[in-house]
Length: 419
Image (cartoon, rainbow, N blue to C red; front, side, top):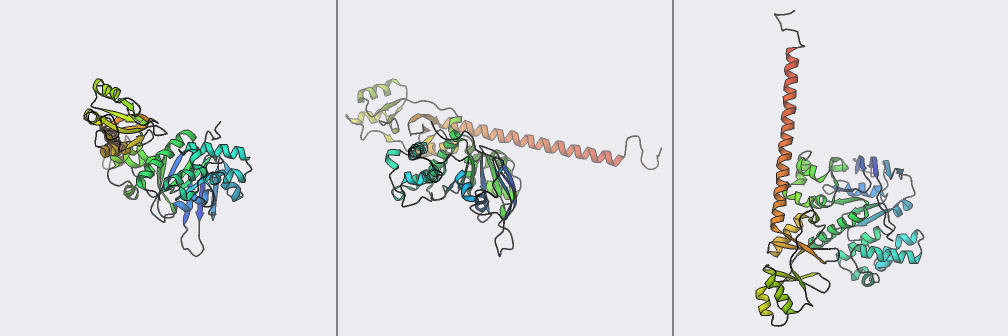
């Protein structure tokens, strides 16, 4: 059975402060915040605002100068910091793996420190590699230098989850990888959270990343002062001030595409064949399916090529040179923005949706995506109208109250007509 916990733990920061000797101003000044169990909270703000310092004080990699930290209701401010860190997973940029240790040894560090048996550590390591999408037989004996950047980050997340901590802290964990890998890692984190329900505190300077993964976002000013702490929807539609608006930037409605997942829209099917199917069977399917094209899957049912009638005429007994390679796919946990970009990349009006191991699940077409954009824009318009109506009602109430005050109490006339 998996040893992953069902829920995370709440985190409470109370007047958390960090002062460095010789500095006139504190690096973090009197921050108070409540994070719910199982919630993903993202700290976003300009460089040097104190967001990473605040994160590191939660597991006391940086010791607070003042204030309290409670995890799951327990005050950990005075707990042995080494004991605390064994209960809090921590993932950083560039993974931070030990280069002289194998993947399995890196993942098993904390379980070994807290006294787990070798069979239990081995079982947990294989479970976690599977969880982050790496084949245990292939990767457990490799060293970090033998991994790509994305693979290293996956191992880093697996290591942070090894002892099944209720809390996971992530300090710009995907900041050092290329944009495509970063998108995939974000999707993977969303999928993991969907399964594990940990409490995650995530630091980034990228507001689009914050929108994509956060249940709530804390937009931080200098010294980690909270400019706004709310849901992505609320921040996009009602930024608290000009500072927050600067982070939202232009195109707020389009940024809302990051709030809807592919799993939440209509996924349709398309005719599929595999590389092992006879050519005549493939030709017959294309002729009878009513579709102009069919999707060729590899032996593991992963999308490989799009085939059209003309391609099969040119195949001459082999599919090696027939068809067009699938350029882009999206997972069920990808955002509609990812899907829209993939549709435009493939330039064919649809994108293939894949499951956890890259297997074919269905397709999402441009019409579905456009309809979703229209729904988001309409929701924004209705929200704006409702907000305007509330403002007008408030102004009318204030005007009425001022008029009542000017005329005096009921039954009392003005000067010259005193009763």
